Structure formats: C-alpha cells, structure tokens
Length: 176
Image (tube, rainbow, N blue to C red; front, side, top):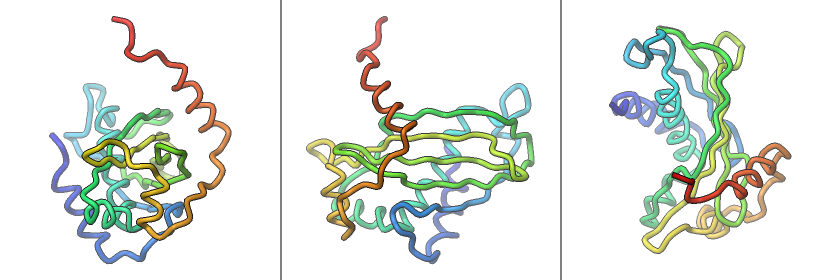
C-alpha cells in the first residue's frame, strides 16, 4: 500500500520550507518501518522506490515545480530509472535522503536520489521524469519558462549521458 500518511507528513513538514533553486538538493529523513521490509527483514526494493517519492514531491514543492504543474494542469511521471543498492536498511533504521534535479534535455528532467544511513550510502537512483499534458510530454524548456528559469541545463555528468545513450539502444517493445 502507498504510504499516504507519510507523504502527507512530508508535504505538511515542507509546506513552509525555504525555496530551493531547481538544482539544489532537498534533504529528508525517514524511518524503515516493519511494513517496509521484505522476507529477509530488510527494506524491500520496491518500497525503496516508493520511499524515493517521499523526497521528490517535497523537492517539486520547494523548487516551485509543483505549483507550476498544478497551475498549468500538467502531470509528472517517471519515464525511467536505475537504482544501485549497496547497503541493507533494516527495521527502525533512520535514513537521510538527498533528492535533486541534475539537469534536463529536450524531453526529460533527470534527478538523482540517494539514501544514507550513519554516513554510508545505502542506495542511489537516477530517474528520468516527464512533465505531461493532455497532448503529451511538455518540453522542459516550456516548463522552465513557466518557472521563470533559464532553459539551459547544467551539463549532465558523463555517467548520466552514458545511461541515456544505453537506454536509447534498448529495444522497445521488449521481446516476449
């Protein structure tokens, strides 16, 4: 089940947080509850993705993106992701999450998120996101104009460019 109460807590907690520039990091703190666990008593990989939502929504709020999306009647969707899991998160572990937009291209916004426990990174995600309207994907240049931001993206790190290129080579639809 989606953690609706936890999301409400994050929205409430961050409703008056200082604004962030589009590429500044948002920090949040979370607890691994018993219902977040898999059969090996560690944070479930699917739940990890859901918890990353708890960082992206307040990030969108603090950068003004959430307000622009609501005003324009747009939506936001995940268009791809890659997660690297490196350390276990166990029941009642506290994690700090870092969420930030690292750049964009002609179609997508790219974000990275990481979870940290006791100063050690437990997982890291690269995410491609699209702003959508009734007619399809809204170009990031249009989104940035609505935010009053320059349309030029910061340079994406080389590993992000390699991920974009590799994903472009991936067959779609996949073989059955």
